[in-house]
Length: 273
Image 1 (cartoon, rainbow, N blue to C red):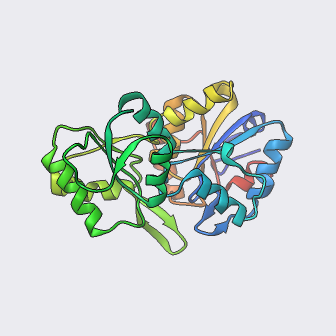
Image 2: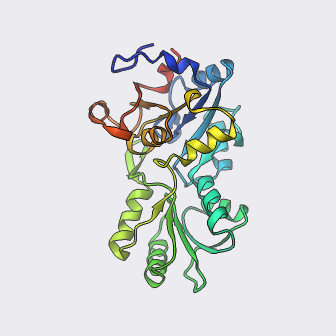
């Protein structure tokens, strides 16, 4: 098997753990890309596993399962996901288990944090100990006002963001993602968050540990160099960049360092063709 740049990509057929991005990699909005169902089926038939690791914090795992079922992937369950909200929960359990957390995010994100046992507020309160923001298509002026008020009046408290993505792909193009939203807050408050999700290697490393495999058997597949590909490279695993989402061919050719993918494919469907 040869990739878009003419490199031998046959090593992908030996992988056992496939860590896939979602937006721009397996679907756009409510449109599942051609060949995705067949690709996932071939992974299972070859004795492998697949997990969707996504920076998109706007949906809970339950919501993602429902969406995959709507798209026709009825075999997918909770175990097939690891989101930036789950990664945030793991971090918060370690460092802020008993703290009051101010959250700027969707109702789904807030509900998931509450379900994990955290004390959460979406309003300004004197007792707030931590701030967490995520990608929020439900964002309002009131939410931004409250976030800026907390960060300005409490400049010493920890401030996290689920992911650094600039944009989220949709059927007509792109909309601002968490990275862009955090920039507007920075301009108002001077505060920059600690990002939790990709490109940090944490999500990849957690899945390798969970499924008792190794780096040689693992591959990360995504459409963004600065998050998906960088996270895989930072974790020391092979990476596949697909041209079905945000990145362009010229950007991949020019990529260097942790943003340079091991392989380049037009889409996930090409991996097992």
